[in-house]
Image (tube, rainbow, N blue to C red; front, side):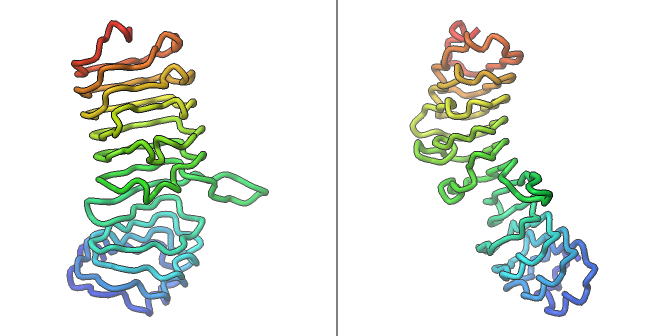
Length: 250
């Protein structure tokens, strides 16, 4: 039913399709209002896609969707999230062109599958990072940010994130202009691209597991911490950082 302009609301009788596993309303631009609470009775539903609609609310009964894995909510209206089911592994949420996407990792505990934290987190466009500060926890393993402004007290610069393995920042601005990675001691890959305001990268000497460091087209970058301790670093790619003295790196 995606991309059907004639749909203006979901019927409350939708729960009668009790074997429904995927509900795709993406691109139904005239779909407005709140999703009916009866949707919580679709216990087999695995995928719910309401992107590119004007949906403005989800009922609390969404938490009853015990098999829901993917929830797409990149809508044109501001939408508040209710409590979500623990089965959820992939969520896209936010207003169109300003959304956040993340995935969760599940582990086994006492024989039951339970969510322990966030495996992948992608900030797509200009989100207010403090709003999502609770996401940056010790379970985070992969972090990708694009077109974001990072301030000194923002969560990505303050949390321990001991399990973080991969960090990618593209078109991100840092204020102040120093990126300290010393708290992310298990980082294996770092990619920093088009970070125009970045002047210094410190804490690299603490990253004994680092196997790939890519720093490209960061025109203000002047200093990087000593890499001499990282004798096993197999990949180092520094390009387009015109103010950086490369003799101090290699």
